[in-house]
Image (cartoon, rainbow, N blue to C red; front, side, top):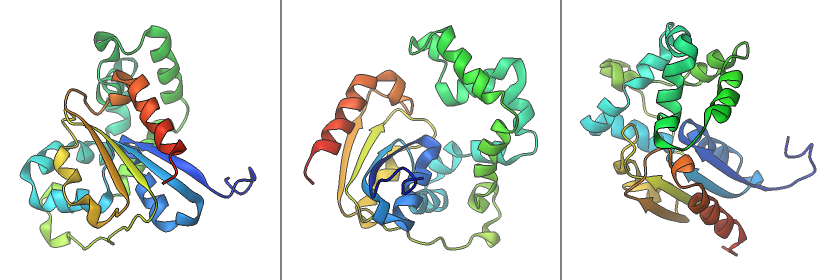
Length: 207
């Protein structure tokens, strides 16, 4: 798509499940000018935490639910109530969105195959450490990120703990991390002006 649009490089921004942005930047660095990650785990760090950190292992149990054959049914019930809670964090109560905003999300989720496409991302993951099948655990490729990278992290994220950032510079040498102790994994909704400002400043910086 980048080549089709006539570009050579672009800034890639990934949030939450879009930690796959790490994977793209590792495999296709020639396309990535800069990488921005917002509360999304580096795959190598996540797998390590599943094996070594009981708290992160517990916080990631939702992955097994997403992998189950019942995921589509559970998350589409009651007008996608569980999708709203899990992925948007009760935005009406928090004041981040209104009903018109949620209508757009629900229409997207209701498209044929939309939820299956989303959950298939998780079904493709090797989650053996979460299920207790330690004998099936296999080493993962250490994904090196060799492009300038900005991490924006809400430390109140209950599913992705701040420990995922510990030692990340081993895999991302050119790294900036900005932490927000008062924000959750939905920081893009909680502090949109701040997040946008950080991204713009990072894009415009020479490094």
